[in-house]
Length: 467
Image 1: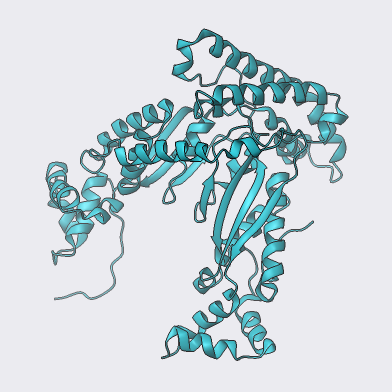
Image 2: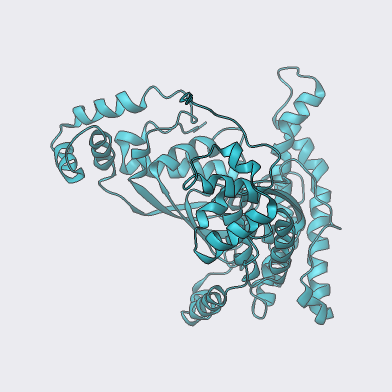
């Protein structure tokens, strides 16, 4: 007797490659998934993947093989490379909740051949950590005074509430060579691409991390990542574009670096018909007209009629997790942002957007939280930062990639971020919240202001925290 009742269950305790093949075989086999899995061995699955994934290019099969890999003792610069993959999940050691140790730093291998450079590098790191360690107690005290325990919480609860506030400030002094830990979860297809990029990266540390991740991944899925190798195409592009950028001599037009930067968010491009495209998309789904016909119809609507549609669709959302319809992905916004490296480090985790960060060159100066004036550490803070940035610029003439390690979370950096409106709803709602880092909160609020200025009919529904 045939049973047509829906059957939903988990495939448990199976190697990732067997899971991948089990799902892949359903396109040809009438058997149930658990029956298919029982017939498969790891060796048979490897043979299948070798034939269909590797030889015939059916890469989607590898998306069913999922891996969780722990990565420890890697620099913040390396973490950027690891986290540059859009289709992966990460959690890492936070500088907002943990105090970093001066003994846990990365020293580029190439500096070992030049003792003078290596010592200059270490001197800067030690000076930054000296001010970092010295700043912790007075900044913590200052924050306690600014945010007193008005609700009479138990001391441990109150301290937990304000910890990120004083650590947010102290962490400006952390160099990007400090070591962090992170967990990465992704499917084998994403891991293969990630490993390939790491093996092709200009930094030796990243190459070595890629080799180690590949070794671990091969123990989990022997077939699906084994052909991840360095790509000359990636390397050649990197070398060409670095040289081409130098030929434009942009570095010569950058002014002397400053200690008191302002955050900048410039809207450089956006979809001017974005609101109408959203409305056209919303009615297109339920019509029998072409998108062009829907758009023409929408453009003829009166303002009030358009607003009623927006109100009906968006006004009842209760929080940022009530995601708006996907039709909000039609309009886009491109921003050129100048911000501190610490804030960028957090914002880069919004990986749905398209991001282009510049190499850290210490060309734009750094940010100085006002509290360093109040606690009497302004001069020491600036001396350490000035020295770090000057060292970065000197090292950068010969070692442009390795020089990034000596920049800090206070270092000013530019990056371009392009997002659709649906992502902006979530990004602004999440990053503008009062519990977030005060620098990226400002960035999110400025992005909201830009969107609300050019698309006020829909911008007003973004849940921005402006307090």
